[in-house]
Length: 484
Image (cartoon, rainbow, N blue to C red; front, side, top):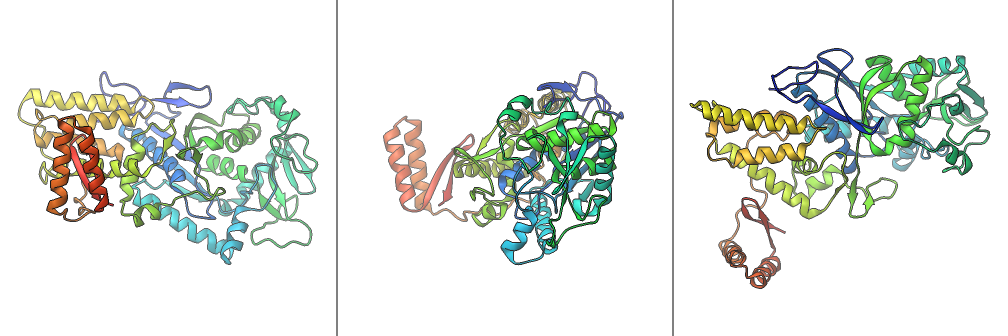
């Protein structure tokens, strides 16, 4: 199954359209090379564990890649590992986050980088996120970064200060086009206190020099002196090394739009004179009630935290599929409980269809029904990755008694090429174990009260269940009971 401009064509299939942050509109995806797509995604700064807000972005990018592949494109996916150069301030001041992490844990930066890189790889594997085609670490691409800075200097886009080499944003008239920044407003009242000597508050470091008398754990010789690369230069240098000076897709979180991705565009396009990226995609935040989850605020939850609380990592993946990637997702325990219940219910339905994927069924009518569901699914995911709509199609098919089990299972497993929920995996054990008969009886009485619209009694029975350590959750397939 699948379609797309340059991918596998099917008559009447909708072409893949993506919301391009550059221009703020949906555009048909037409790759530079027919049948192939080059994609760069910003990876982690490996000074701490990724939190589940970070991981939501990687799930969205995984859905993007899977949708491209579902449409028949061969994807080259590049992801960086930031193990140097990411300072604690966007103003090019403060400490390198890697130095901060090493000091916090009493280890070397190299040990910190290795530990948290492995932790990140483990997390994305547990979430069934496809590994990138190419991993690239900033510390292993220092020559490429120095060469890019040198090109910018030769073309007059860089200037030297006592603490490093800076990009002169006044030389690039299109600076801020991705973020639609008010450059004059920023000049009049800078958001951050600029480094001493910067010509403009928007100028940014390409190469930072080690201060006299200081010995850093990570530093390299350069034409400007011993030091280390700025954060932004690594992505431009490595993306162009592996994908070319112009490539198809660059993705990341919305927090990268104003600074990181804006600066990537400036340094890449000024160095090459070419358009850097053709499609920019950005995923929205996961929020804790009213606040964005962040490490600096100390309100972040890791994937292991969820596992320790009895959840499967794929329960969290399912939760992320219930919201469009360009919409904020509010994280609540109740929502994660519902996602766990729904994922298990979907697994149970598929396992009820037998061990084999089976055929679509004997009649032409059944085959047509399967094709209609497949077409609706494709229409949903090709409409800027509308996975919530695609998930609704999957559930409608799962409940459709007119479609034989074999055909139903075959189509649902095909959908899972995009969902990535491992719907062909063995059914996990019930995390709640056996529910006592008296608890089941209370839940059944509550369900009868609900059907009779006796809401007062239903609420009282819910409270009674809570007092003995159980919670009842209403789902499209009926009530489910969980041990609290």
